Image 1 (spheres, rainbow, N blue to C red):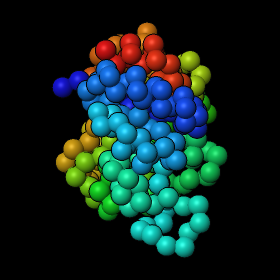
Image 2: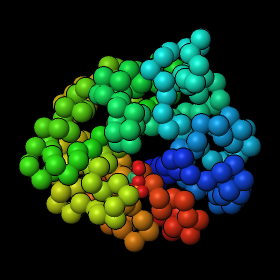
Image 3: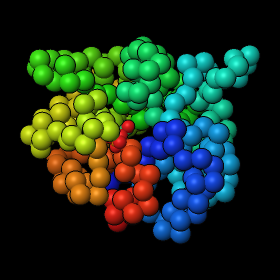
Length: 235
Ligand code: PEP
């Protein structure tokens, strides 16, 4: 099976540009690949492109339906035929102050609605430098993962590597991949956990990153906005 590649387009590419990129990707029919697109495109794209798997970038802490202007529940996303959603991306943790408790509620809502969450964890440079990064990641995992689930995806994304061009060393990644994959609570909570790495992934480093033990795939931000880069990463 090919490694899982998740493209995260964040709030980039307008409708016209996104649609043109999808038309191109649909022809290539890459395996084990999904794109986290902006919320307004989800239902439209899921109906227009059958060969591509789409993913939401976040869900609400509110369940179901109701008088919650501006919110987007996991149930609502599921009704758009979307199977996965990112939760706890560092940009939401930083900009929207999503705490571990909020991320866990979002992950639980995904599971209840039948959506597989992609739960992002990652330390900032301060924790990495002062040597407390393991404790920080363990706490994020303990407090952010769903209470029970058959399967979910954990994305290890060191904040200091996102969008910076800095990729941790092989030793640093091997250590974290092993520790996350063997984390007792993760093993206890779900039967099937996939671990992906995100942070400055591009066509030049993707093969090497995928060769490191305990990794199941990659989460790609900026490089996934380029057709050429994405083609090289997926092929
Ligand atoms: C991300 O934001 O999830 C990400 C991995 O971004 P980049 O690839 O641009 O570092």
